[in-house]
Length: 561
Figure 1 (cartoon, rainbow, N blue to C red):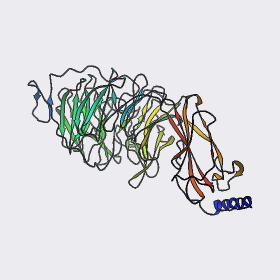
Figure 2 (cartoon, one colour):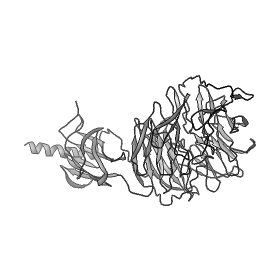
Figure 3 (tube, rainbow, N blue to C red):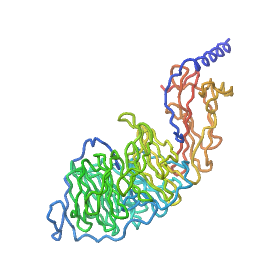
Figure 4 (tube, helix red, strand yellow):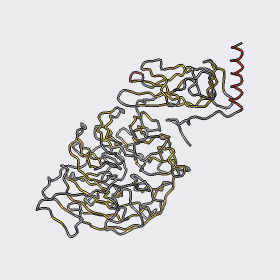
């Protein structure tokens, strides 16, 4: 009798599955799905008000303006940026975003990702040993295989890119702390010094050829462009009438170029910080300028224009690109900038060569374009529904403006600029709900992944037995099924976890990596659609998850009380 009742219930469940929509409980997001400013918060929110005070000896000299102070007794700087594949934001002093290395063998395959404790809105850099440095709430150092070398906990967050000098010292600023600092770390992760800025440092530091560290910072509604010696003492500062989120770029003659929310692009002398000239635009300059080989400076303003400014401070041309990300320069001199579309702009006259549309509801913010030696352009995009971020992708674009490949790598967004390593690996950060992030590596080499091998998509299972293909393409499980997974590198596994409804149901450390799903994981109804998640943790910090949406029927529940 009991058997007949159960059989009747299963027949009823099958009928319901194909006639009545099941109750959704979770949305599926695949880490490897293919789909055919540095920080841009339009509302700045509450800003810390901090009185910045410095002590100077009698040899300190003020120029004609009180906003500039030169400290001549500090230690003279020596040594410039590291000669590595990507030592700073947008690769070099001029912020061209140009890599000397090819990514011809980088085909959209993600070889690993490693989890970070919060959303990653900063950008990676790479030293000459291939070590990747990224920031979130900590500063992390990763080996090229994705394992953690070290991390240093900060009070605030990092929303910019570090910079690495020729001695391996790493410089980076913090935000949202009280006070904030510009930090200097030794290559082993120990603190060398920290310089108190008070207010937030959204600006990515840049290292001059003499070792001087330049960066921008906020101070209430105004800001500073600052220069520090390598021992952490102030060399000079320049006060602007708006906050400074822009990251300075340095010309071949040493001139420091930086934007401000007061709408001006500033050109400052490197030895004392006095103003050479300023160029006014019609909106905030939040992003970094970039400099062509001939000295032409390009900057984007929130008046929606990309400006070409001559080394003497006069405008050559301007082109409407819709504001957006920091401009960068391709291998042939083409200038790239945009917001909801990417413009390829002729450097001679500002005419548009082509426009790449990343798709509906997508925009480029912090995912600043990077250029490989073979001409491929990499950028990160955010998918927005209204004012809400709902996903993020990395896109590879051919030099003619056609799409090469794209990968969905975030369910919230991407504010991270890509970096390209010597072997052609492309690194980029992502942000995930509710408050997590990843560093991703795309390129040749061993993959650290996992794949669900059972149940198979679009099939029906009854008490673990395969019944055939589902007519509506759904994966249907009646009663129970053995969930099986296959990691790519078994000998480096730390653990594999099986997750349903955000609860870890089983964890194993040895093969076979499988788990018998034989309960109802909610109170009611007995039929529901949800997502099975299998997460592998590799030794050293790399993690990967695979997902499968299933329609599941079971009478016996194990809902947590």
